[in-house]
Every structure is written in C-alpha cells, then in structure tokens.
Image (cartoon, rainbow, N blue to C red; front, top):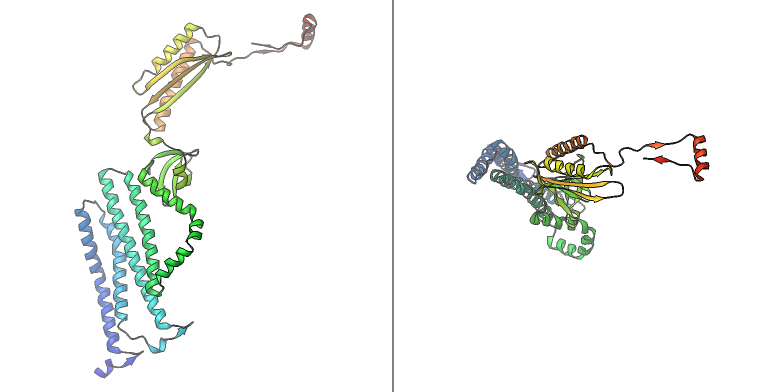
Length: 380
C-alpha cells in the first residue's frame, strides 16, 4: 500500500497529491462557515457602532469576497507544497513555465485580496452612510461617496503596483524613478484632470453646494445629483443630465438657490396715460391690499415713473423659500387679482388699443390740396 502512495507522478508522490486535495476540500468545506463567522463579527461590531445595516445587504457585500479569498489562499498555499513538474518546465522568451505559473498564482491572490479590500471600503462607506442617515445629516452622504471612490482608486493603484512588484519582480522604485523623469510630461498631459481632482477637494471641504442642492452655473440650472472626482453631475430643469468639470464649478459664479432665504416676484405695469391720478391711487392701494397676506413678505408698490406713453408701476414682493410649484401658484393668484382690480377700475395697459383710420384715396387728395401738405394718417 505504501508503494502505491509513493508512486511518483509529475515529480510528486501520490501521497502529496492526497494531502493537497484534502487541504483544498477542507478549505472548500469551511470557507462558508469561516466567512460567515468573520462577517458575523463585523456585523455585530457595526451594530454596536450604531449603524442600522440591512443584514442581507451586508452579507451580500462581504461573504463573496471572503469566501473567494479564503479558497484561493488555501488552494495556492496547498499547491505550493508540490514540486513543479519537470515535464511542464518549458521556456517562453527565456522565461520558465514555473515562473509564469507562480506569477499567475500571485496575481490571482493579490487580485482577490484587492477585491476584498475594495468591498471592505464599501462596507465602511455603508456604515458611515447609515450613521449620517440616522443623524439626519444627508449632506455628508455625498462626502462619504466621494472618499469611497477616492480610496478605491488609491487601493486599485496599490494593487497594480503589488502585482508588478510581487508577481512579476518589477522594481517599483525604478517605476517611481521613471515617473519622476517623465513627471513633467505626465503632469502636462493630465493638467486638467489634476485641476479637476483638486477642485473636487475644494468643493467638499468648502461646501459651496452639496448633492441635492439646486444651483445655477453658467446659464445651467438644476439639481446636483453627484459630485465626482473629476466632474459634477447636474439634473437640469429640462430633465437633461449635464456634466460640468469640477474646476469650472470652482472658478465660475455658482448661485446656490437652495440656500436662498426668500423667493422674489416682480410685477412691471405700464398703464395708459388716460388713467387719472385718483384711479392710480386706488389702483396702488388695491395692489397693496392684494399683497397684504401671510404668505407674502416685504411687499413694495409705487409709481416708478411717468413716461411719454405710460405710467410705470412697480410691485415687488417676497415669499418664504418654498418650492417652485407653490411659488408659481402664488404668483398666478396675485396676477389674477391685479387683473380683476384693473377691470373694476377700468384701467388699460398702455398701447392696449390703437385705432388706425385710412381715408378714401379721393378724400385724401382733397385733404392734401386743402392743407397743402402730405397724406395724413390718423392714429389715436
């Protein structure tokens, strides 16, 4: 029996293959149990921290990477105990097959480890998001998303450097040296991207606006949906999706309409010159009474100017920072009441009625001969 297990196949005895297979099977059996145990510890720690996490979402987030990492680690560690078969030790461009297989194995292990780290970052971001929701501070949610994406980029870059250094034996120090030599060219090529990245940090620390705010920038008005590492996404009032570089958001004049304390409405009326002074007084007093409402703040009504063809009346008023729909309903109600007041007082808008009389051609010639002038156009 011992002779059977001592048989050499591909440079390894059968006994060693058996031990490797048992180790992999045990790792496969316990991967679920171990992953659930670790995930359970993290979930309980999260509950103690006060984050109201959904357990199904949490398990979906961490169980898969934990299981995969454990299985890959056990498999690679077990296979490491085997001698690489001489029959498979070929060379490609002076690189042995053993070196290629080891590089692939290390790449897989590092990739799964980086995947686990990325999911851990998602887990921490989920904790912070739930805590901000519990505290009612929804503005910090976008900050959490920003730093989550930023850390993911950093971890991904570190993962690539680990693969180059550990799996393929590339000297990372030489890589940084080469970056230093080509740094000027890279900085010039990535100038706009670097500026947008720096601008994103300015936005998050200075907080001129946050996700959910209604802003106006460069004739674009809409709701900020996301602030990314390079750009800000805005859903316009036309329901289009506009991407604005962060540098432009920092350098431009941004009107954060969400932070307004009041909404302003303006009425500009041009009344006909036939309107008497007493009627004007009644009209101005009537507008003041219309604007004397609890929902209207700081109303102003006055005769602004007496022009050559009209009396100019200005009416301004404010409301609380209500929604645009509510504001438009108030404006419509005020405008209709002013229109009814004009009808009661018999006031007409300047230029509302114009009569043009053209006389008969023969009468026009007679009139021209009588006055010795040009053809007349009577307008009233």
